[in-house]
Amino acid sequence: MRDITLNEVMAVDGYSLAAIDTDSISLIVDVPCMLGATVDYMYFERDYTNEGPDYATTAAEQVTQHNTLTLYLRIEMDTGLFKETELLTKRAYFE
Image (cartoon, rainbow, N blue to C red; front, top):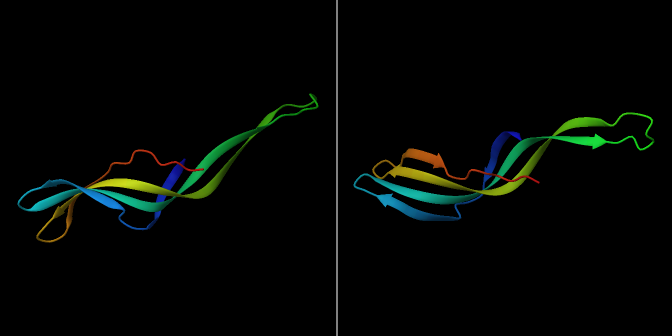
């Protein structure tokens, strides 16, 4: 799999308060979204006549899949700016 892209953020599905201090608030946020990816695959074809060789064919396909990403966000309360972000989701599955 290669070239993973974020196609659409649908909503913020839920959040948890991670930390709060005098100037910032930290949240863990669940974000349902549509991800796109280029998937490389290989399929094998057999020569059932036993007269020729078996061979493999490679291909690539663009797929889109609904996934939920979990993010860590630290937001400065005075300005509303994101001071720190981290993607906590380590795997996305594509069918």
